Amino acid sequence: MARATKQHSCQSCGANYGKWQGQCDTCKEWGTLVEEAVSEALPKGLSLGKGRVVEFTTLNTQQADYERHHCGLSELDRVIGGGFVPGSSILIGGDPGIGKSTILLQAVGIMALKGYDCTYISGEESPQQISMRAQRLGLKDSPVRLAASNSVRNIVTSIEKGKPPHLLIIDSIQTMYADNIDSAPGSVSQVRACSQELIRMAKKVNCALILVGHVTKDGQIAGPRILEHMVDTVLYFEGDRGHQFRILRAVKNRFGATDEIGVFEMTEKGLQEVTNPSALFISNQDKEISGASIFAGMEGTRPLLVEIQGLVAPSQQPTPRRAVVGWDSSRLSMILAVLDARCGLSLAGNEVYLNVAGGLRVNEPAADLAVAAALVSSISDIPVPENSIIFGEIGLSGEIRAVGQTDARLKEAAKLGFTTAIVPLGSKIKEPTLKIIEVEHLSEIVSLFTQEKPPVQNAQMKG
Image (cartoon, rainbow, N blue to C red; front, side, top):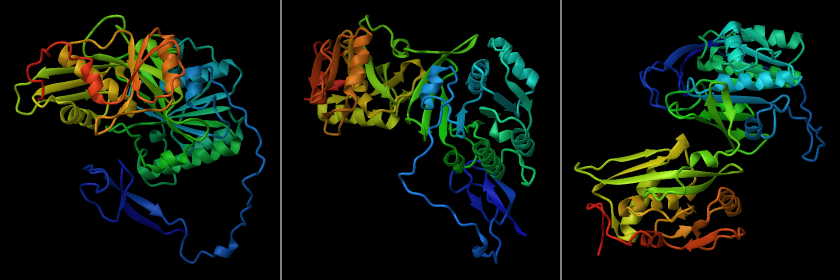
């Protein structure tokens, strides 16, 4: 019989310790260590010769083709790779109230109307509460099977003894518990054990499984990190409650591309798909406004145009403020240093603010050139050339480096009516409808905005 031992597990990152301590050495969180009972998986004296022989195969083994289940939301289908794969497991996380339960209820509601067997099990809401949301979304007649349960044993028994569904949703994994684990629901051991059992069951009955996960204050999915390794796909639902747009982003996908995104708009009728998000993330493209540039970026396989806003203002403080929304603050510091050292533009005595419009977060280094153009435009109070898009990576010596997928970026810009593109020198251009301005060094961007004296007195040209 397995011998039970005690250990202290961090409820934030899953690290284990032999004794209690106030702070977790791994994630630096305070008061997160909880005592849990752990049984040895392989007791001492286990005879290794009594196991079953594993069947081996080769890399060229013919696999049966699987048929994906399309949910009817094209943006969701895009992110997961073209539909739900039978037997796969998906983990979706996001801030409270961002719309995780709403989009999943819409997905199962539409799939059930198309003839798929769908089951929605909630550990947080009653079936009556879910039905009220379904009526608001216009899905009250959808034949979705609802249940409220926290016991993994009961859920697995109900699925295996009944008719297996095509899609099973567990909302959320932190509320589930296994009665053979001596710890509270949401603990590291409970989340790990419940997830493992649900994933095993999904592969056995060949149904697609979606697990809803809570997130920590840092935006990471709560529970052990191994949970993200156990599932096939990890999705993050992002967005700001002050904006109506929501971004569904894939950070891991065994059946599709990673870093793919789907864009939704929160309305009274639920989440509506945004088929052309570039038109929503940019504004005032026909107006001459200083401090704003249009960046042609890529999110997975999708080109996405977004407006980057910069503001440089004099500061009376000994340490000027640097505020960034939607971009990496360390890359902003790098660009400011390059402008100072390589282009002779001193910004040390100014406050710098940078914002990516629409609540979107940009992670591409290709946005460097658009950020620099917005900042220099704000200093000189001279707008970026009309109907222009900008992209390119900036090196520490000030050189502009070429980026990938240039054709997709330019085609998206041409489709939305842009006429000019400022791109790195040496980019492979195949879009004849745009006027191309190739730049080799960041000083060439600065020269576009030196037609008149900069209005900000603290920002000055050296030499």
